[in-house]
Length: 201
Image (cartoon, rainbow, N blue to C red):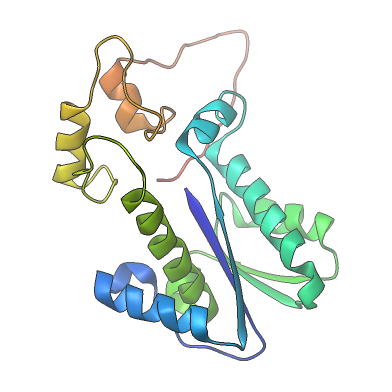
């Protein structure tokens, strides 16, 4: 999982990375990197780290922590407004960030990457960085497609690279419903406690 952040002193126009072709994303990525009026940072989480953390944290919680760490890295740039795509309930997200950063104004919306150019730029940074990290990852079978469960090439890769004893290599995030189903992992029903969990892909 890769998080991207872009800082700008002016309104910028970038599209949501999902609306661009790979070559358009690459062109926009280079433009972001070469623009001296923009600062940018990415935060990449290894699948093994996510699997370990999800033993006692939700994916939303891991995402909150990543966002907090990114904002802390960028605080010295005197930011005033922070535009974010939603992670979990908006009110919870807003309250949590406002508690830690009371002087910042948070604009948190669903599909913010298609509404605000600054978030679109951050989505391009995250997506292209993720793709580059995967391309440079050294393992035997790199015909994994996009790495998303909706991609038939990814599913074929999972089929080819499954070991009945060990499961998958550490490139795969084990706390992922696609993998849990393949490994036959079932959520246990503990009647002495009840938890609520909201997740996103």
